[in-house]
Image (tube, rainbow, N blue to C red):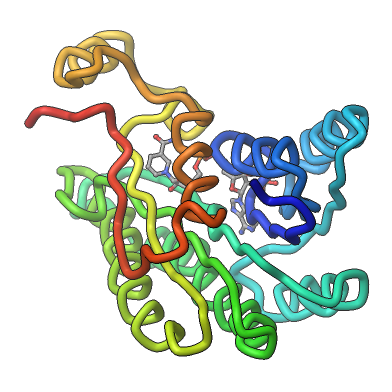
Length: 246
Ligand code: NAP
C-alpha cells in the first residue's frame, strides 16, 4: 500500500511509533525511524525490518529541538529526494494534579508534544509543498478531546495538536497535503505501564470492545491515512479507543 513511499515516523523506537513504522515497512515503504534516547530499541527495529528484506534507516533527533529537527530533515533530504508521509508520534505523558504541576513539567510536555509536531510539520511541509503531495498524521489523544483530572498539561498539549491539525489541513490542502490526527484511548505501551491493576480493570470495564488497545490497532489507522485509501480525508481526528463508554 506504500510501495516506494518515504515515511518518517517520530518516536519510532518504542510503542505506537514502532508499530506504525513496522506496518509501513511491511507495506513496502522506506521507513525512517526517528528516536531520541532509545537507540538500542531503534537499532533492534531497524534490524527487524532489514532482516525481512524491507527498507529502513534511522535518525536520532530530539523533536523539541529546532537544531535537531533541522539536521534530521537535512540528512533526510540528502538521502531521499522526497518525503511522502510524516507521522508526528513522539510524545511524553507525565501526570500530576494541577496544584502540583510546575512550569518545568508544562514546558517539557508542550515542547515535546506540541512544539515537536509544529517543527516537524513545518520542515516536512516545505518538502511536500514542492512535490505537490504529502500526508501528515499527528498523534493526539482522547484526553485532548475529553480532558481528564490529573492530566491538565498533557490534555492541553494534545488538544493543541487537534487545533494545529485542523488549521494545517486548511492551509496545506492546496498543495495536495492532507493533515489528520489520530486520538487513541488506552494503548498497551510503556506510556501506561504504571497503571495499577484495579485501575486497568475499571478502564477495561468501560471499553465496549472489552480490551485495552494494541499499538497495531493505531498503526492500521495510520496506514489508512498515509496510503491512497485516505486520499480525500483531511482535517479529521479519528478516535481509536475501542468505544470507551463514559
Ligand atoms: P511510548 O511507548 O512512551 O513511546 C514514546 C516514543 O516517543 C518513544 O519512541 C520515544 O523515543 C519518543 N520520544 C519521546 N520524546 C521524544 C523526543 N523529545 N524526541 C524524539 N522522540 C521522543 O509512548 P506511546 O504510548 O507509544 O505513545 C506514542 C504517542 O501516542 C504519543 O504522542 C502519545 O501521547 C500518544 N498516545 C498514547 C496513548 C497510550 O495509551 N499509549 C494514548 C493516547 C495517545 P525515545 O525513547 O528514543 O526517547
